[in-house]
Length: 421
Image 1 (cartoon, one colour):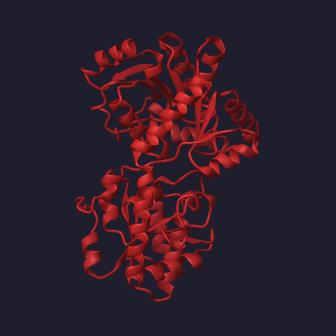
Image 2: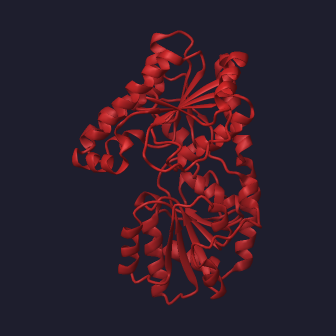
Image 3: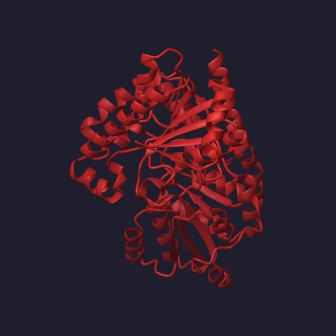
């Protein structure tokens, strides 16, 4: 166990905040992830919420996995945050990935046990009555529920942002029924459940779990800024000068995010002799694998991979069309960011995007999995700048409802209301 203090000034301020405000102004977050070294949906959500809570003077503890990854999120300016690193196998990131694959998930289960045990040991010593928010069922919530069982006054909220049982049994489906049972049990034992979208809320309701929607958010002003710096890491300016429309996908390179679907649509567009487009992928993942796939599909010169980027608003500024094809749960953060950037969006006609996008008004929804329809709608938007502009303006206006201060206020009001009950 290692406690990381974010600045020399932060330690006395955090302790003073705890003494002055007590439990009602204290929050603990538990995230089974190498945060803040890692960037993902729930990590980005946590980072942005922490910033707003810190501004409001909350005393915050964050439990996460220790990691040798380079830092992604900069928390040095946060004055009231205590970051506790729990020692697990994820300290050696690449080795852990190999071990997980070689042991068919059993290394992951051992790692999860180490995290739960280490987090609970520290919680049981340092807990001062604050509310606990677990960032996922199963691993994240278990130490909080153990503490709740042993002490009076412990109040636990559990956030649902993915299919947790699937994540723990990706290589061992035979164990999935047990994890599904444990997931539902942990949610029913929590004091409240936070869903990241109305589709997630509906899925939970089917399982007998009541939840409150706390959506993903966006730094609206930052993404809406038309004067953000344009990146030099890709020849985007040359592509623009050549008169090609830039079609952009932001997110991890993975079939579950629709990377393969967009590549197949691009192939169809190329076969139709459409030469006025260029696809740009912005996100982490197996770049070499997807570069090879693009080459096999004959898309050399039509596709670029930017990798993981911190300056996503700058990249989106040069996009003509944003593509969002996730197959997960919740209000897609990449879609909200594209909306805030004022971009015309093409997305699957699925519960994920129907709760965000009004078809034909703030974006275009396409039958899920229909790559022919996807290619057709992309080409139509490429050929119609006026329609792109109208869709982007409507999307940008609607995205303002998801500005991070509004999302954080909704979280605080939910926690305060549940606590009073």
